Image 1 (spheres, rainbow, N blue to C red):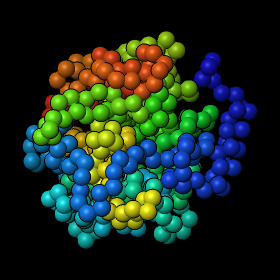
Image 2: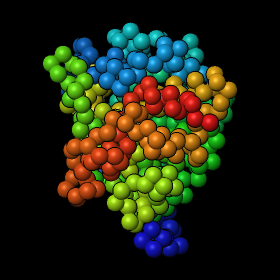
Image 3: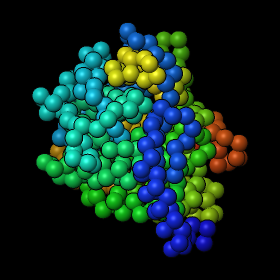
Length: 410
């Protein structure tokens, strides 16, 4: 009953979203966006300008064991669509600088690895926004860092309203040449849950052969959409500890990691069957998995457009850093599955259900269990614990066995 919606509530929510669609809201504004809008959950820790600082691709690949995968497994043949709002006029040149700095393969329009398409209006260049430009730079650079042979398509929504962002998601999954033809869609953004959010779930559920990945948010014990959708892989955040030489020591829950129980989405069967704990109300639990997010040990990102009057190298954290990197892992698994004559992982019947099924049979070898740390003061729902919890989900990936299990699945 608590999740049921009246017809009047749906109408009012729809009206509210339509009204907000006419009011531009930019990423650099402080505070949460109004209902019907999303923001990118990143945190800038530092601005270094001249040289990269923060975590490098080599470090993070080593932390999670991605560098232990066969060299042939780098996401070849897969398309990762990065959906963000507004234009990033320097997206491709930023990626070029990033790749040169870290010795990564080139990813350009000329070699067919990178492309950018506009959603909405006349499909012409949109106005730029500094916060969203930094977010898309983070997404592109780090998806490529994890799966360097996957194609990257930046799909730019006309605004940060859910209506425009979901139109961009539609373009991302539409077949080429009119769409991106993506196998994986990254959504490093989210907004307050709303009455009629479930109307968008069908858009995810109907996309055959496509996996959707979203950041869980950066406001602690709060659930955001689209991470709340049962058809989306929700990525929470951790704090990584290293020694003086940068060697991985362990992870705890990041205090900003978004999570909790959805107000409007029921627990999907893959969670109720697992089962996730403390769910007597039968609600969708968020997040599903986790990844490094603490800005204190953030990621090196190059952005020439500029944010808060600065441009160049930034150190950036937030759960929006984990979403594109989990997407890279899925691209690696997909590439190997296709070579083995299998289909790509599907949003409806495969990826989320498969990740929970893997956890139920081989948890200790496929996930790093994050069992300490909190994202609020609400008791068990805000506290990391052994197994699944509402701060870090199942935990962070142990890449070689987890990707192997994804490949081996039917």
